[in-house]
Length: 182
Image (cartoon, rainbow, N blue to C red; front, top):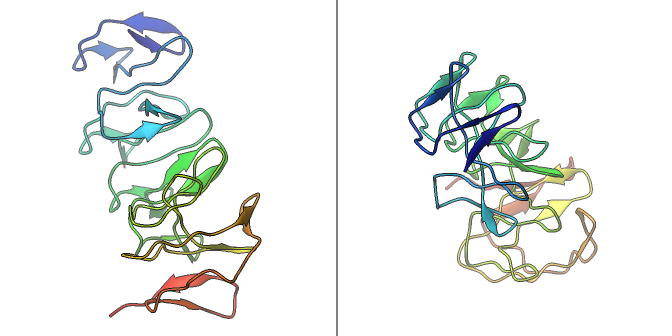
């Protein structure tokens, strides 16, 4: 069904509940009318901290483009969108990710992260059965394309820096891998 934090609306995505577009939510999980996004094995819902937005990228919520949110984070379906002066990002319960490798979040290249692992937008890399990214102790890096990099992580840090770093990724002095533009 469709449920908001304080009410229940019908299953029609275009309906309005308290002036906003209704979201999708179940009793024990989070689902969205958009089947492309997955969060914890379920489709991610669309919700903001204090409002509900629809899965339409062009919609505006409080002057910003409608975004995706998990239980305690904010994400956006469009890499070019802006949220709080930064490029729109994807966030799960315990991390911040971006849908576009070229995006910058807090001066570092955005990554993808899930509740218990770190994944990137590049499907060739594998990390614990998920798509892998590169992360340093104090920075976020962009994943490599076309390579299978098996990286060992300790929490959200790299515990083994001996994995295969692709040619288009380089290490900079501030502890951040950045995408090499060419």
